Each structure stands twice: as structure tokens, then as C-alpha cells.
Length: 318
Image 1: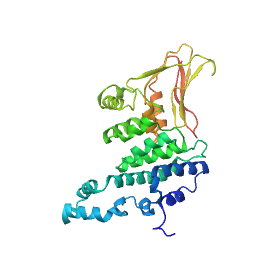
Image 2: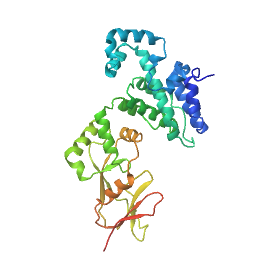
Image 3: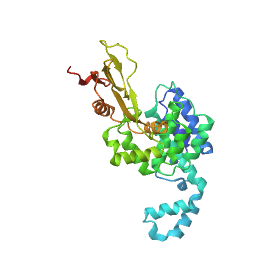
Image 4: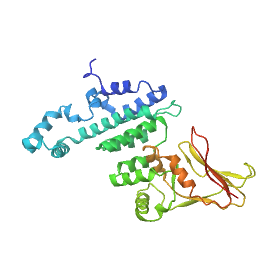
């Protein structure tokens, strides 16, 4: 079978050939559900993301003829006008199929990065997959197709990673809120951000309000207090208020300490969307947050980073 005769599912199967068996089996099952009758699509649809389905279906000639009559010769030189014409004249069913194919392609590209030993891999259940397909077929932008591809890959590798509510939130995520969230997530110290002075007023406060209204951040800050005192470290207590990405902060405190950490939580939807983004610089973020902790009754604060010796952030001189 030559390249032009290969089916899209065969191409995806080859692309994920090196995955752990449980991941590969679960992923191909999910892709089969997503594409349905499109599993026999030509390989060209998968290998040429810039080409639409209109270039490889019987509708091609009809669409081209309508577009030619509608926009005339000069319109061919105008990509925006051509795109508008395609959206008007391309059959809805074909556009939805194209979107699902692009999401499948994105998922195939992401699954190798998201993969592990397959211990937690399983095909998404039918209810989740039905919801996912409805949103995926309406994902017409490359940004949304990429996000839904990442979601499908993540859901296969770690079952239960993304809720139905997150699918809906992603489908409604406009560019301005996405930009707001990316900035907020970059300051994460795990599942929250430190309630630093920047969040109290100005643009960061306004960003927090917008993200709260979008259901991605909690509407109010919260304080985490010291755990019950247990003299486990040279007669002092031990507290780990923040951790993420293998990085954590240890606080050594005396029984008389009244220290606390104030922060803003990300919601479950926010955390799930955040898992699709580049990992924040946890080391820098936690170092800065640790330096803002009230130090009354504290003995020392240390930062632990994988592959490095513990870093002394602060120590009492008394």
C-alpha cells in the first residue's frame, strides 16, 4: 500500500508504535471513537494539516466552483476572503469532520510526550467521549484543536484527568481569558498562587477577578495555618505549605509560632487547564513566596528542588 492509499488510522498507529502497550491500545480506541467512520480517511489528511478536507473529498470541485464564482480572480490573492468563502460554502458536516481529524492529529503528536509506563492508561468512558466529540468537532481554530488534542492524550494516559466541565470551559475559552490564565498559571506554586501584593490591586487584581468569573480561580484568598505542633525536627515542628512539580518548601517552626500562608487557589477546572500549559518555574515562584511568609516563631525555611541540595531561604538569628 503506497502513501496515498494508507488510511489516517494506520498513520496514527505507526506514529504511536513506540508507546507502552496499555497506552497505545487505549489511545487507538479513543481515536477510533473520535473519528468513527473517518478511520478510513486518506493519509494525506493527517500528514498535511494545512490542507482542509475540502481538498480530498467529492465536495472539492463543487466548493471550488462556488468560491470561484463568488470571489472572482482577485479574491484568490486574499487569504482572509478565501477563508470566509470556505466557511460559508464548505458543508457543515465536512468542516466538523475536518476539525475531528485535526484534533486526532494533535492528540497523536502529544501522546508520546504525555506517555508513561501505562499503569493508569485506559480508554475514556462513553459519556466522556461523547461530550469530547461534540466539542472537538466544533474546534475550528488551531489553538482549540491543539488544546483538545492535549486533553485527549492526557485523559488516555491518566484516566480522569479532565472533567466534562473542563471540556466545556476550554470550548468557551476566548483569547483574552486564555492570556490572563497563562499569566496567572506562570506564577503557580502548585495548585495556587501566593497572595503577593500584586494581587491586591491594579491589573493583577483585575485579572484575578476576570479569571474568578470564568471559573478558573477562587473568588477569595485563603489562609493556610501551621499544622498541629509535633517536635519532629530538633524540638521544632515541620510544615510544607507549598509543593508542585517535585519542588517544595519546608518550614521549621517553634510551638509559639503564629505564621500562616495566604494564597489564591486555582479551581479544579483551572488546575486541569493548567496541566495543558508549560510547567511554571516552581523553583523561582516558591522561593519568592517563601520569603514573604511571616517569620514569627520560625526557625528556618528551606527550598527543595530535585537534583539539588536543600537551599536555605531564611534562618532565625536568635
